[in-house]
Image (tube, rainbow, N blue to C red; front, top):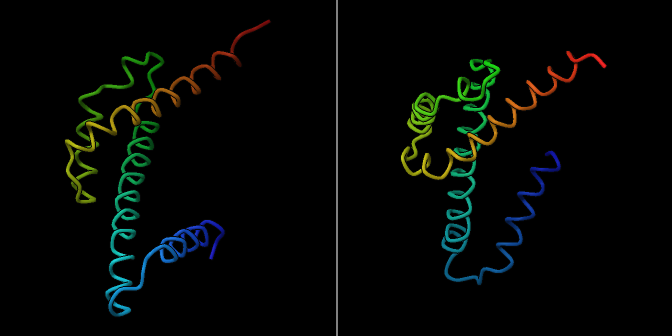
Length: 123
């Protein structure tokens, strides 16, 4: 296991330490694991969507002008498609995730064109 995988195991161990032992092992484990598993799966889905959407933006949008690079309707359409792929409700995700996605794209865009501009300028 990698260090980050062990961190997840330790986090779950800490959850188990706080849970009183009620009923059978199966009851106790299910009551501890399922909420943790659900949160982990949802976080993985959200990270997947945001990473794929940023990769898509990086490949397809190369205009120097921000307003020509980030077309919100296109980005929302792509986010909806990714939400469908992973099985989450698109409108809720877009409501909360679009700003994060836009900011990540803006950072990439600024870094790309600021760096280019800096290397192309003469002293």
